[in-house]
Image 1 (cartoon, rainbow, N blue to C red):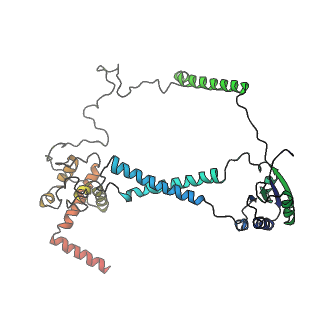
Image 2: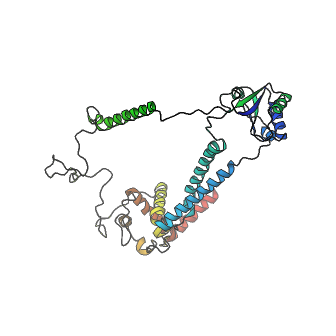
Image 3: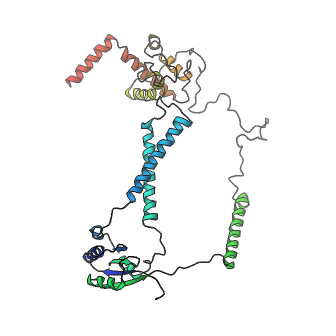
Length: 387
């Protein structure tokens, strides 16, 4: 015992008021290397110990701001420098669109740095060789006692003086805590090296046999060995030697009915609008129009593009020519494309294209209202006022 190096002198108390008084006395006496352990948080302990605010908040702030800077700089570099791309007429550095990603990265780095910094640097965990481990002192303060210890490294440390002070404060037990002897585990012993080599050999051989031999034998190969034709592979079953086959002539995949007038400037037959201009249809048409059409045609189909001159402006949809288009002609233009406008058949479903047609009619009607429309609007307004 005498050969062991003293780490600290500890004291146990059986009353939370006594541990508060002891912590306050130790702090007022000028000790700096001491700590208190209690089975639950004791209110007022931080004031008794005169603890300073933790610096953990600065770690959170630093890494949180780092996350903000990294997110903004990365998105600026990718969207404005490395691969500039206009999306929906927005500027290259569209800050509102970057806010969600910036927020997420800020929270992520701030949270991870706080947890890792607290456990690894402030608490210095796991600290498996800490002298307090496996001591009677730690067992007691983990159950129903309140403890305090002063390290021998404290400039004011005096073992006898501390014992007397703890006794005066009402300690029920004092204990010397020693630094445990360092245990070494030699890893280069021949027996251990042989065992390590045998283990590596067995694991490597077992893995090789399992992945390269066992999985290719019955019954483990039943999923791999089956009658099938892989894409881009030849076949001995068909006379032409191709494994991939063309669809049977005249068949159409479900949900993929081909457009019969693809490539024609005008459909030879009149296409009738299958959708009534109900509230749901108009809301769907508005949603799709604002997504796919408004970047070039403008929010109200005036031809005032939102692309800031980076794409030719289309004509207004309120011209007499556009208003005289049939519903089928507008549907045909959306489906087939016209001039520099590409086809939107792959991006917008057939029902959504008809809904857009209905919404375009609403926009045209709103800016070219007839006298009867105005009278009807006044009547509706008067009814609403009366209600």
